[in-house]
Amino acid sequence: MKDLNNNPSNNRESIEARETKDKDIKNTDQFKTESIEGKIESAEVCGDILEDLKKIPEGRAGIIVIKGPNVGEKFFLSNIDKKEFRIGRSPDSDILLDDITVSRRHAVLEKHKEGYRISDLGSLNGSYVNGKRVENSVLNNGDKIQIGKYVFLFFSH
Image (cartoon, rainbow, N blue to C red):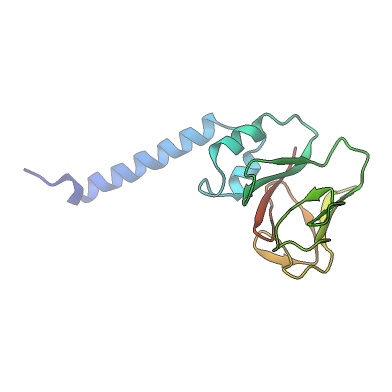
């Protein structure tokens, strides 16, 4: 009896079949968030969140919690007359994050001609975009924002 697992040509065919299957899945499930999917690993965001992103109408922007309390909670930034959204532990924050790792006045998301920008407001633990600590940064569709123990996915259609 042959051991199929030790046959190099059989392993090569299995790998090629899996790669083809992965490509087919991606090709049949293309949607307006495909630029987000290219930036994140599937283990980072549950399928329900990706499904929710598919349903968001064109012209909307915002952030969605992908790690921390309230995973899946969305904060829409567009279609509102406000140009800035304060993030922090303070009750007067637009986006209230009730956690000790978040400063009272932690960061602000600002609407600009080119899109959105995040600016840290001198917080103790900092604000991170795609794993890098930032003072301020322009946000692109699919960027991950970390504030304290919360991780958000920025979306902009």
